[in-house]
Length: 152
Image (cartoon, rainbow, N blue to C red; front, side):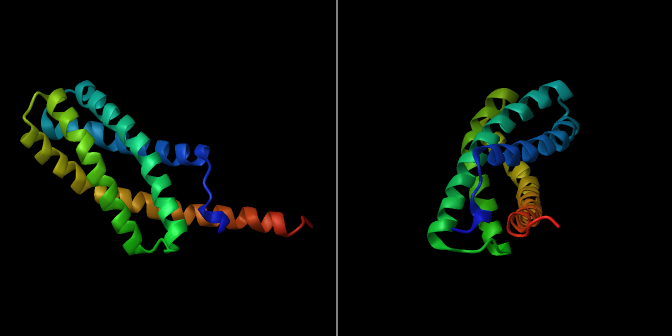
């Protein structure tokens, strides 16, 4: 098995945490400004969505990695695009009811709002994971070289 595909629970947590911390830093102030809610109100909603997304991220990426091992595909741009779309569809199913309740709006309004969020997160998810994969490949390659080549 390719060592670069083996990810520990600790690494999956780090990946999801990095993704969500950056997302909160971008989305809470932007949401408060665009929707005219207080930063605290949008910050709490963003945090709730983030916790749901973090759990979903860890589960979804474990399934995605398993599919990659079984099917043997590479993480090309197309694979990452499919990954991003499938991830966001799953997240919509969880976030729309939460946003409707928290913002006291209808499900349709929450769905439309979530479509706007998805339009932000599709490229964000793609860019974050593409960057993460490339940085991870560099780190894994360095680690493997250190194991193979004795220190001089």
